[in-house]
Amino acid sequence: MQGTIPGNPPVEFDDVDSNAVFLKDVKVEFDGFKALDITRFGVHFNELRVVIGPNGAGKTTLCDVISGKSRSKSGRIFFHRTETTHLADAAIARLGVGRKFQTPTVFDSLTVYENMELALPGRRAVFPNLFGKERSEQRDKIIAILRRVHLIDALNTQARYLSHGQRQWLEISMLIVAEPKLLLVDEPAAGLTDHETGMTADLLLELRGTHTIIVIEHDMDFVRRLGGKVTVLNEGKVLAEGSIDEVSADPQVIEAYLGR
Ligand SMILES: Nc1ncnc2c1ncn2[C@@H]1O[C@H](COP(=O)(O)OP(=O)(O)OP(=O)(O)O)[C@@H](O)[C@H]1O
Ligand SMILES: [Mg+2]
Image (cartoon, rainbow, N blue to C red; front, side, top):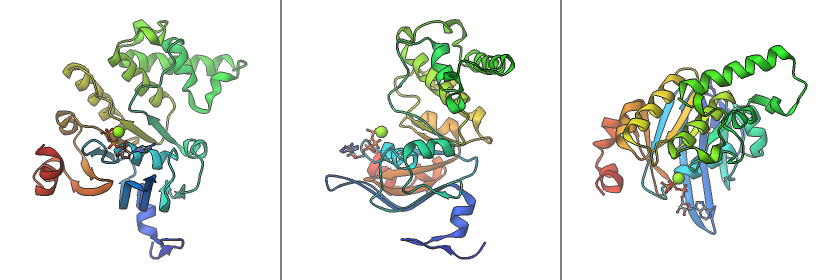
């Protein structure tokens, strides 16, 4: 489609139409410090995008503005062709934006299974009078995911007793069971062993093609394994975009990030 969607600043129909997530001139400041200053950022429908960059580059803040946790002081944000710039985080979540935080946010005192129930779409778990069929379907779904991430034997274990890797997987599983259209995954491999990191990459690759996924990660082996397009952030700005080989050969990227 030709033309622009009016507003301040105006955006092209094409950019909004062809991207699951589209940001234009987005700025986030903390006490005058510019944490994020994005001219243009778009992720296509069902694309798996990896965002890398040094500490403090604005990667988590990028997830925060997309999910509505932080506000942009200017510019515009679209999700699935709906403008979300001024929507509350709960409204953005209802549109289908799901999130895994940098630090796992599971409930320690609940079991693995109970944590999964809380993550069910629409939080249907809070209504006790579910029909038997629906309840057993949900149970099957939870069991299937837990089996996939090797947490099936920990079904009735309180989350406080899980290892760091198991907590990361529980949180990714909670994200999957919530069936979001977009998964924002912040540093899923942090603190994991090589074997666990490989399993996490495989898990994300299984979701590829049916979900839009934005993964933030530092571990370059992990990034390579995921494949796909990489966005490099530095000092809040998009420094480079392309394949992992393209961005790793970019002198600006080497100087800002990889060479350190
Ligand atoms: N709530 C906040 N208040 C003040 N400053 C903040 C806040 N959140 C982020 N910042 C600052 O904004 C900048 C970007 O932070 P952000 O957490 O987005 O970086 P990051 O790329 O995710 O870094 P890391 O790799 O360490 O997770 C940093 O300088 C950070 O200190
Ligand atoms: Mg971060």
